[in-house]
Image: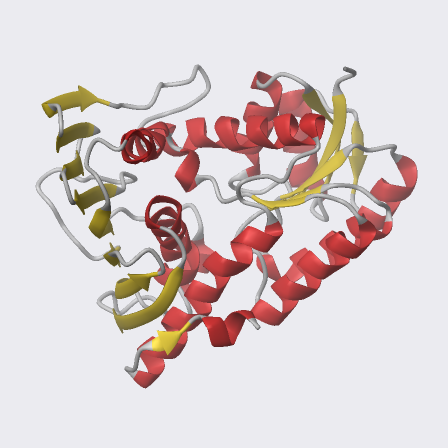
Length: 344
């Protein structure tokens, strides 16, 4: 099979990780890049040896024959870009947050479905190797049927120095980080029927919430707690690790700080180091996220080759996006929110 020809739209903070990943994986390469900022275009183009550079997405689609496009811009620009790709019958990977509103997200999914082109959201956290290891234990049946989970991301890491816009939005931790942790909860325990949310702002220098605690009822019957914080100072900074506790009918799973996985189940207790690999271009402590970018992009290429729907398709991601919207609605009302009303 011929190598797939892709283009990257958006050459900002995180896109460099995606470019490294495209260079590493089999079956695809980036042949053109696009950004409205000529300086960012030059930096990324020179670093990765991409000669074809565009400052206008319409010119990119008109000038290139593409098998897919990787959209790595900010949320307000996603819908016009995704709809432009759909109009050109070009499959799309779209960065998260998927859209500013659930209505926009539904419209993007609809546009790609109508055009008959695949759409995947770059929801990479579930592709971290430690998270995949937890999923593998669940699939093995070692702990029986899960009835409780806690998925936790608590840190005092300064995320604002690299992404200063995060400090200015009215929404912060649920939209930027919590969306990943909520997706992990769905990945491990299934879809959610009801969510109850509380939020707090501890850092006076930001506009949005930096602490969120969410209680969820899953369709499977399991209950989970998803808790996120960028105001938690610990003796050893865990950023950017997601810690997981799952209780099942026959045992437990604990993914602890330092990537220590303890499974107590039908076969006794086993302790495993599930540390992610440190790729040649990666740097600690970001390496777990960076290796997940390779994994999700390889998954995308494999799905295109096989003609199957990606795990984090646009349609699937609507369920995670709806959780984010429901969390904000519930934080404002201080009442539980039913998910089925948002997804109609």
